[in-house]
Length: 196
Image (cartoon, rainbow, N blue to C red; front, side, top):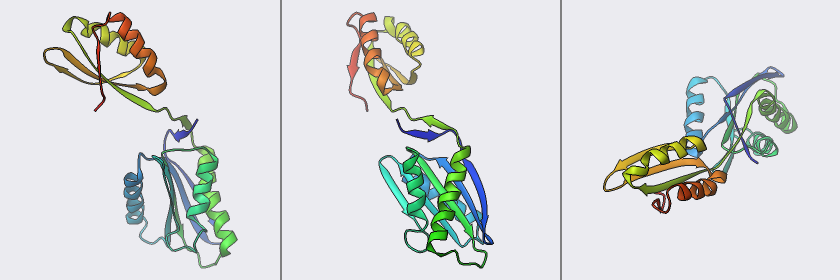
């Protein structure tokens, strides 16, 4: 089962006078990751490099930002993959200290910056969500709302027309049982629609 992170966690390493500020945090997609990297560049104007790696929504990225190819982004991405993470951005801001580390030294430094942050991170299981839409007569709205609460689902929106239309979000692995339970309780008067 893939995991995400409960909150952002930071690390701070100094290796041969260079400072490596690592961070791992949950992000929904590549656009959010690029926005976060742009924010870090603005916050750390004196930094030599802002390297990053991403695993989110089936996409991955490994950016060396001027470091020799394969010495920063790829090793950071490998750390994320080995931890079975999804929806996670790893960033490392490097302030150059004047001493070259060599390719092996850079790989170790970037790997360690991410690994140190992950040691402190709280992993949370990533559950896929399903969105359901249904219509019910007004007389069943209360029953359906009680079933939504009992299932720990989230009522996303309600529209009142000739019938009540509800849009619901719940963990994907609980969706089939919820549909069966509501169908039985509604005695065939619940209409299921395609999610939008």
